[in-house]
Length: 165
Image (cartoon, rainbow, N blue to C red; front, side):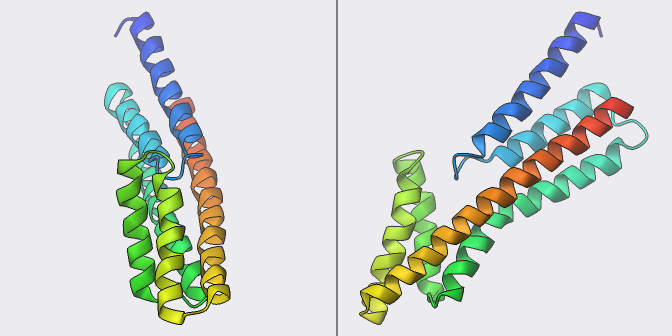
């Protein structure tokens, strides 16, 4: 491969990873998957080398943990505050659906609203329903930190792979 094409490809991979990392600020943007895809492209184009397969497997594992962090942490924190499983599932479904209808903030508004309405109907207590929503939002904050940190770790693992490849 000509040097200019190799350099251009490497710069595009780095820019894609940067977009993936910055995209993690938007809760529904699959930034960790974008970073993973850029690492995959790197492996296919530049080769996996001696440690590439192991490091790419680690990047894949980190991506899977990051993708699961959202639903797990948000649902766990809401459940910890007393939310029913039905309300949690309805809120997460509303979050996904309304993200597609009104991107990027539709889901961020819909999930807590649906959770509040479902829990208020179930409990007939505004304070308890509000506490459940606080739990969901606390979980959203924790999931952001987890996804963002895991994204940085994925990029660091890739950088080590690229440097030693």
